Image 1 (cartoon, rainbow, N blue to C red):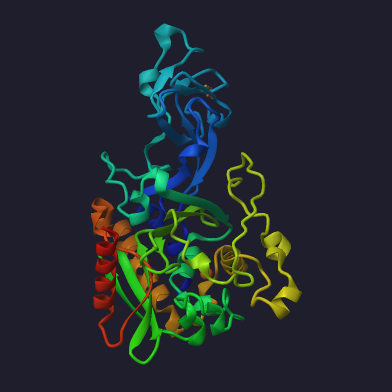
Image 2: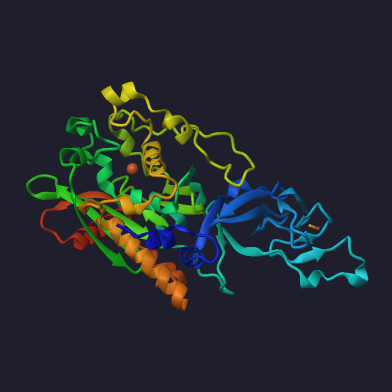
Length: 429
Ligand code: FES
Ligand SMILES: [Fe+2]
């Protein structure tokens, strides 16, 4: 049960907040490369509570900056993206992707002071179809993340953005609690439904797994375990990689080159960025269709609003299109789609859940561990400027992968993980 002060620290992400400042020590994935065309219209981008604009200049470079023109604060969203810079349409000042003021055409040349003003621009990077922003204070930004799926080349990667209208932490916590799969997603599913593939069967044979968890150099790892048969154990492994990357056990570990980042747009809106290697879901799709589980994300039209990107048509204003008859007869929720089911539960808690009402269970072991880890890191950073090691050098993220598998009974959990992972990697080579 988190006290109110802890909850504030965990969920407030604006500039000057402990968690917001901690997150600013990391690269933040912000947009798809395809969202910005060279010399195309600027994009309103909300990130960690800041109103920004993003644009791609003539040379293909990405600019991400405070949307307010440093002259008299007109929004650069209305600007002209011209010949390697964005021009404010109020008085014509022009800025390059680094925020440098290139021209002040309404000022007589002998009075110009372009070298003394700049737009507040952030460092940006682009890799494998994803645009990242570094909003921290360090002169030299850290290396980009080493999260496995983010390293997959662009032609082999699949990416999906979905906006969730609640705190980033509610999203992250949903990935750290695998016991909900046996209810929210598979609550009415009988073991026989899995006879063709078997590898999710234990989730509905035993819906009350036990958990283990521990901290790692990049965050924390956990596993849920239950017997598979007399001689083997069924494991589901997941990770939290600081500050908001998760690796949930969605597929067998051999296929699960996958991550979901829960990027705060502000305190109450989150962009879920799922990145996976093409084919990650193929084997999962071989099973018989499970009522309610098929993902059919239908998006509302994109708008230019700060929060207008990647919103789902089924949402809290229409009760996620719950069908009570389907709920009675076919699926546990009557809500169509695994992600939408998660969306419904997490948004139903309120945009920032009041955690003083909770009663955590053993299945929330990793949730508690993640909160303690995040609180400790945010407080240390606020008090002394200390950064988690991975904020300086994220290479420790290498090697982490979530997923499920079966291993010999009695094996130590991290041994089972290591041998499964090295077996998968050898088989892949
Ligand atoms: S407000 Fe932008 S140029 Fe004047
Ligand atoms: Fe879920």
